[in-house]
Image (tube, rainbow, N blue to C red):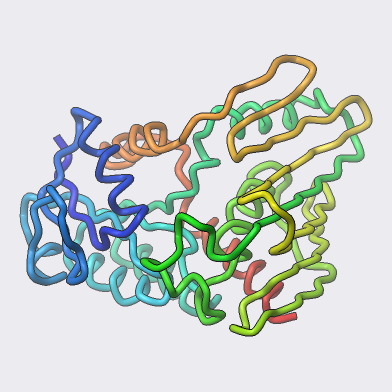
Amino acid sequence: MHGIGIVGLGTMGRRLAEGFNANAAFRIVGAYDPAATETTVPMVDSLAGLVTDPSVQCVYVATPPLTHEDIVRSVARAGKALFCEEPLAAAPGAARACVDVVTQAGIPAAVNFPFATAPAAVRLKELVETGTLGDDLSAHLTLRFRQWPRGWQQGATTWLARPEQGGFTREVVSHFVFLALRLFGPGRLIECSVERGETGTETRVHAVLRFAAATMTIDGAVAGSEDEFNRFEVRGSRSSAVMSEWYRLTHESGNIAPSRGDAGQIAELGLLLEGRANRLATFEEAAQVVLLIEEMLAS
């Protein structure tokens, strides 16, 4: 059984805690979050107390991006495995530092991008790699939010509303940039325009990224009446496939209904901790996402 320590019991920390409790291969040893209230997770009074606990094999980091580098360093010094929320950092230099730290420490490490294991994303990757969609691939991502942060994020996560580490580009576009890297290979930013609101966080983003096997356009905005709308289409010379509602896939070969990806991620984390091959996002992949995202936001 893998002993898990959790840093941060916000929305994601609590959600993954439920996932760990539902998997018999994991046991939550404890969690550290000075702001946490009304939780059934056993709490410790310091980060050091958590990472030095000999029964903790892996630390799951579910705190805001600006805190990740320091926490990663503490966990690596203790020789524990790492499972970190995305984005890995809010600056390319910090992301690269995280990669270097885990590489030098030689510890198992991964980042929680659910598209690494979600059935819809895995099937889309098959459609691309087998040539089912054909040649001349292109991708288009459309995102709309009635408000940002989203309604369920209001209040408890004010950092999401600030430009230093928040905004929908880091929080949502990052997932689809990771998916594009998995589907199409290395990418670079070709063009980008950003509009910002009163808080300095983006309200509209238009970008073009060129990957090894496709060009991707991004059209994101805080606009419209829907709480959240996302649509990722990959089009080729033979057919097209669409991911929507995060985890729904529509293609002529068969559709996949949406379902949350936590269970698959946790199962793959078990493989990582056992030293076995797994599909989780590496720190290197996550650093590449940060580089592209921060280039977009710097526009």
